[in-house]
Image (cartoon, rainbow, N blue to C red; front, top):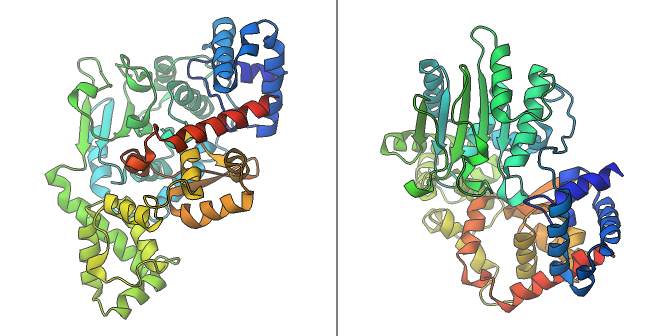
Length: 462
């Protein structure tokens, strides 16, 4: 019954997750097992809470969540999966993300040099990289972690990996495995850092890298991820986030703790950013095994000098690596065979808009492409094609075609217990979707999709 108890703790937690797919990822068990255990929980408590029988769907789940939280929630005893020490140079949960981010990594040397100087000049401290979506912040962290084998955590909004308790669970396990910290299974972060600092040898430093503080889901009033206001000597944090207004600042430190921000948008870094963007384009047209031949064919067919191609695509990118990630493969795959260099979209938002119009999302409302997108947005975590089809009440093959043909470049695929699951790839695309009138949650189709999700989840409880 250990899995049921664990599920009970998660289900009754402050940030309870009420769908089976996310719970299965949390517990590293199959969705079928989650469905079975949720059924056991419901049967166990349905007699104790008669008001459950008078509710349907999401209302029933909310009541159950509230009752379980009141009676059983014990936040001081999180479930921590074991991980063999040094089984991989960085946490297995972030292995695929790190490998993807560093596969075509180029440049950013000025960032690493500035951070290294910060470490040299200060006994401890917080160093934050600030930049807009798509400027390569996650890739910078991934590259640093891959080279220095630093403990790390990547907040990922679209996968639900963005809560303080998940961060602490992961970092605690990494530090315990790396530094052999006895009696630390329930230790808070300041305690862990103090223990590690006591084990560091002369000249050794601990750098913890944390990506995307802006995606953290946490109540206001406290430091994001409960990061400590003071740090032991030789302990540093490498952080990234998007820009925020001064009133949104959520990291406070004690007087005397060194803090530095490197804003990638600052004018002093414009030339560095442009050089790195161009280096990335040169890499793809000259070296990259997957795209170089197709890109070179597109360039040569139009008799464009290489230098002109690099300069103009770099200009259109607006120093945004995410733009290049989409546009260069699209060129290679023939999506722009009828266009010349000047007709390529300018900037990431224009690229998203072009694809939106290509999919006829505004002129053909209610189509399966739109329903699939709504489901991915509402579930908010990686889910299998079978689950999407079950919610949409359509054939799984039709959903697979939409996922692989229409939205594939915007989705991230991951293997969860042998099953391929899908989620939105990048927060910049979520931002674009939130700004679309067609994605208004007040629309009838949105309400219908939510009702289908409720029915699907309730069916799993029976």
